[in-house]
Image (cartoon, rainbow, N blue to C red):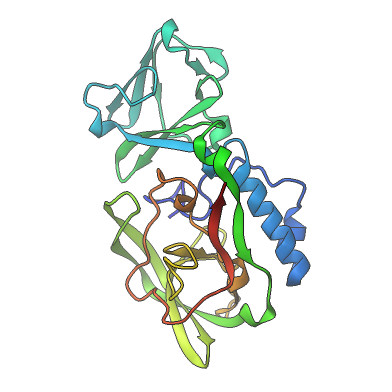
Length: 288
């Protein structure tokens, strides 16, 4: 479900490894101090030169049969399990840090955008593959979104939003088709449901389980599209052996597409729109 493992843009998509001066230990600590460190870390990640604000395009090769991509130098061709790039000196491309001319075969980049093999000046051209389709993503530190960004609007920590939860895995993983931010439907893998009580009632969210054991939910609530972005992410830590897990809505995340329109974030699956107002966590991205 994340950049390297699925077809959509999830909570670990679009980072360049930048976390500012905040350590993972500080950001992972409970309580208000840990929340402030987490918020600082999130802001540093989002505003990094090749963070999510820097994405200026996702170009599908199937949409460019002539091999020419908008505002991207070179000739790009999908060829089975690889992408063939052809460039001249006038294209101004580099490969692994060296000027590139000629023809080369590329596979999907699985490193942060800053470490992409192909560059055009300060821009990074990242090769991705989703559901068998190839695309080139353009990351530009001088993007309009990065220049206009004024911060993440987030509700300060409050202990009432830290809830005991229970993870109930499905007998087998499921895939549901959901709309994505780019208007296409794609499969969203789900591994179980997360149950918790809010305002006196039990609620559940369908979730996926990441490789590190943590959970990931895409959800909406009654604030979505008004005082918060139209949907958000929740990423609880790995459950205990008996399924118990802390559900901390203070750390609700904005999806990557809240920062740049070229991500393909999944919308919430059926049943993941809560009938209550979740006023906690990240709400919107502010612009100048």
